[in-house]
Image 1 (cartoon, one colour):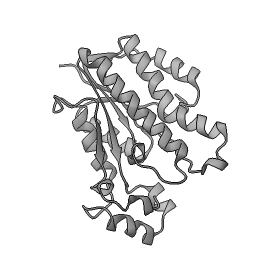
Image 2 (cartoon, helix red, strand yellow; image 1 turned 90 degrees about the vertical axis):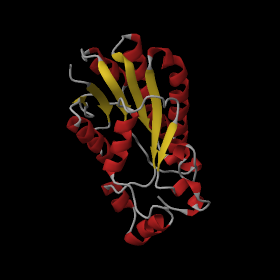
Image 3 (cartoon, rainbow, N blue to C red; image 1 turned 120 degrees about the vertical axis):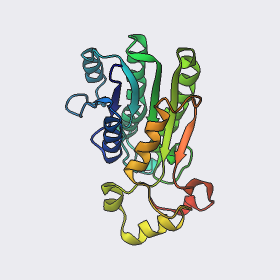
Image 4 (cartoon, rainbow, N blue to C red; image 1 turned 90 degrees about the horizontal axis):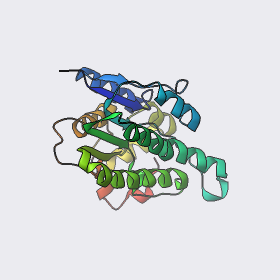
Amino acid sequence: MSQKILFLTGGAGEIGSAIKEKFSIENFLVIAPDRQEMNLEVTGQIEKYLENVTSTVDVFIHCAGFNAPKTLENIAYSDLQKTMQINAFSFYQICQYLVKHHKIKSPGFILGISSIYGFLARPGRFSYSASKQSLNSMIKTLALELGHKKIHVNTLSPGFVDTKMTRRNNDENTIAGFVQKIPLGRLAQPSDIADVAYFLCSSQNKFITGQDIVADGGYSIGDYHIDSEP
């Protein structure tokens, strides 16, 4: 049996690194270009990189993400454009290339790493929420269009994950407040998200497509999320 291949964006981040490690352990060959190899802000660079990918992939995971919180009056058009490009439009470009050029196997898997802010909202997340909701909608449509090819298409929406960025942007009291509002009583580890990503993109997933799988420890089912400060 030939080795399966994962094409991964955002592999340098902590969640992306955990996904890369999980799939490598499961004997996948992981293709994960860094920003120098494929800058998702530059559509021409995306196309140029993809033209040099000769392999047909079993799985595509879009884990790349950008988030620069600003309220509406402080958002320049370029801010919105950058967030949409990295979080959503680059996903469209990669998916279109893979499908049009028959570079994703049938059966196969496509997964977008979204966010709870793809269905929740809070001040300062105008651009980020718009991009993640766009990604979620793209995923649902692709699930309908690619179902006949036996390609499973889903999003995975993490809640609060224990990363360097979370620790850098929040003090211990703030993080303790997050934990208090998470029914399972802790932040997610990157490996928790990677495990769900692997399940959704493996032979274990036989009948889930077009869905947004939320991995937030139960946080979003409460009525207090609007008061938190991620």
